[in-house]
Amino acid sequence: MLIITDCFVIDKQKRPQNKSNRKKKRAKAQANLWLYGRHAVAAAVTNPERKILRLIATKNARDWLQSQAFIEQPILDSTEEASPQEIDNILQAFNLNRSNGTSRGTTKPDIAHQGLVAQVEELPARPVSQLCHNPETNDIVLVLDQITDPQNIGAIFRSAAAFGARCIITQDRRTPPFSGALAKAAAGAIEHIPCARVVNIARALDELKQLGYYCAGLMGEGREDIGKIPSDCPVVIVLGAEGTGLRALVKEKCDALYRIPISEKVESLNVSTAAAIVSFSLRAQQSVHRSSRDATVSISADHSNIR
Image (cartoon, rainbow, N blue to C red):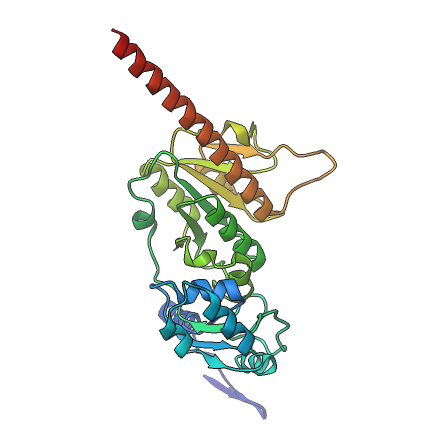
């Protein structure tokens, strides 16, 4: 049934887009990602898994690229030179949305691109089973439950790289594209820390536990201090969105809930700050455990030699 008005035609029988069409649209959007900032772009162009569609730089930024020993000549040869204003215009032409870097919105971007931008394709998708198989004792995996702020996600990637996390797992539907402000906040870490996007976080935790991981949920009302997180097995740190925290089913899937001890004067910490603190704490505990284990082995060996 068609209703014809003086402005437009409405098809009442028209159905919502099916899932395959939505997936196609998302795939098209993800193939049009923009990275900006020197560290983010330099990391991308040296990542063999990253497909670079365009590389644009001011003269100063190109000179900076040339000064980096890890940048190969073919990369420099493919660089398009532009002025800062021209780069602003290029980003504006693609309607770069400051929050995520995809082609949305019409507001002129207010972006500190440092004279260096790259149009790229999304990195190849990898499942949890591939990224987390055969875990080692000191493996750390970060799981992000409905964390959607690009700056926070980028900062978490940066902390994950700093403390040697094995990978990050996010929810596919609610996570912004890994470009724009997110990539700049990560300072190149999205090229070094693998990420699995999953449909269901709770099922992903079940899969991780089957693979041998201990799942530690981080919440303000956690019963135990983060210093009590086991350091003698691979650990998954589950982080929730600020305000809402972990969802009920996700909490149920965690082996235990932990808290960061903070002053009563402060209600909570930014989630990216919390991710850095708990990652550092666990790495420190693992180091102590490893030293203690090595000392025990050494003492045992000495006693064996005496006999």
